[in-house]
Length: 65
Image (cartoon, rainbow, N blue to C red; front, side, top):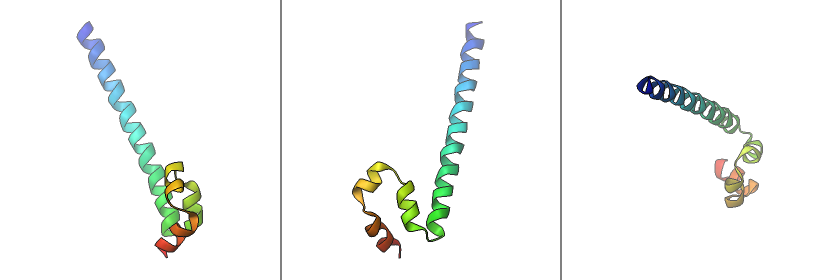
């Protein structure tokens, strides 16, 4: 019984991890599409706080132009 419970939890956990990976991947692809479309200010606005503290919107736009 214990082995089956552990197996069930392992399968459930791996399924959740795969779902989260797909969500992260789809968000990253959507952000890259904004960058590829040339909407640099919008992509900067969608970026993380750490990114925005490191690079200004203007610096980001110039770097990608």
